[in-house]
Image (cartoon, rainbow, N blue to C red; front, side, top):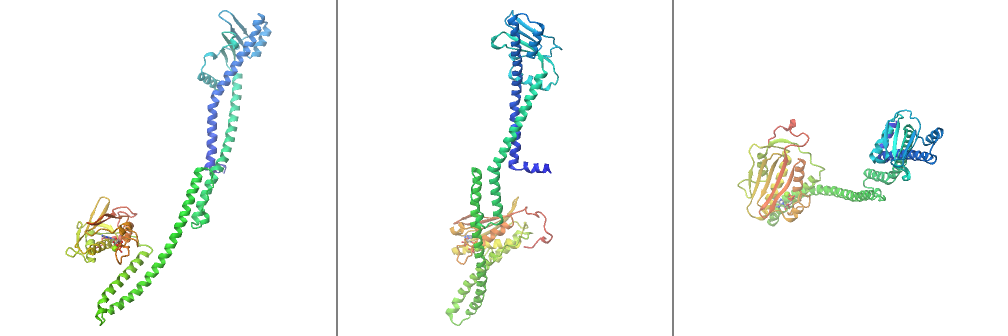
Length: 481
Ligand SMILES: Nc1ncnc2c1ncn2[C@@H]1O[C@H](COP(=O)(O)OP(=O)(O)O)[C@@H](O)[C@H]1O
Ligand SMILES: [Mg+2]
């Protein structure tokens, strides 16, 4: 229960900061602790030396000291004995019995900082109470050297006390710092971030509600930037949504109009048929043109309706030979080697591909028809070339012609529905639908070249990929294209 609560707190931004602050402050305290405990020991020993020096002053004053006074002086200084060397000859000493041999000697005059640290840590590690000798420099140039012998136990006790105080203090500091940081992070970061997240969630739930657009109010710059970016995105999305909705409504209306218009035009077609048999030669002559125009209008309605249908069904992949399909497309467009424009087919016999044969037929028919229309519009002879092959990754099909090239309008709106047509009676849907169908196969349709010498479209179909890549569906037995 407590563990889970702790985990929940630690998995928040402010919780992480809390933990890290405690850890870092403790680390900093350790770095401070080690030198200061060494300093503490040095000060302690130096104080002992000073006291011993003061005790030895009694000797200097009076010369001879009684045994009682000597013991008292030494007990006062907290040492067993003192040696104070004035110069090469003069040397003073107070002494009392040393209970055990001296275990170690420390000369403070030549100890570097690392020696001091090592010796201090040694004291902390050694729980015993050995007798040690300490040598130092007497204060106020009062001599060459002073040396005392003392027990290490009391020093260790004081060092432990001191260490504990530092530890408690640093724990207190780190807890206070961490707590302050915890609240600062909450105020400065967590609260604003939560606000952004809440706005995102509310917006996701009702993306068209303009009231939910965030008003930036964070004071931290990065967070303010985030709020601003979110606000801008929301504003743009709301506009896009409105636009999309309007377009969808418009699309619906267009589909209805196209539907009714087609019905009206179909009846008109029937009447136009009859006008053809009119006795009036003028009327009879105009009839085919009328019929043609009506047929074009019907076609436009039909392709609009086809495009408006929610979606094409996903491609039903089957394996079939490419070449017969290319021949079929040419034939359906009334093209062959001998016609004008001529249609040349170049694909390895027996090369199999995997695609939706019906959709691919439509794609290629659109491309071939465009090419034929473009060539016919020039009034010159021309050629359409349909070729196919396979690469390592994909199958490719190329549709090239010797026509006049795409007009600028078509080029600018390439593959965009309703916008690219530069042809009388054209809908601008052919290329858009073709590209969409190819994309549905995971492939792509590209305009490779288009200039005064002709136009070339290239279609790539991936050989693998998709979820059921590699395995033919049972219904997908080889399909005669
Ligand atoms: N092979 C081509 N050569 C020249 N122009 C082309 C060719 N293919 C397409 N176009 C141009 O691109 C336009 C758009 O074609 P498409 O999307 O099929 O619509 P539509 O045929 O209904 O006009 C055509 O109107 C035509 O001007
Ligand atoms: Mg077309």
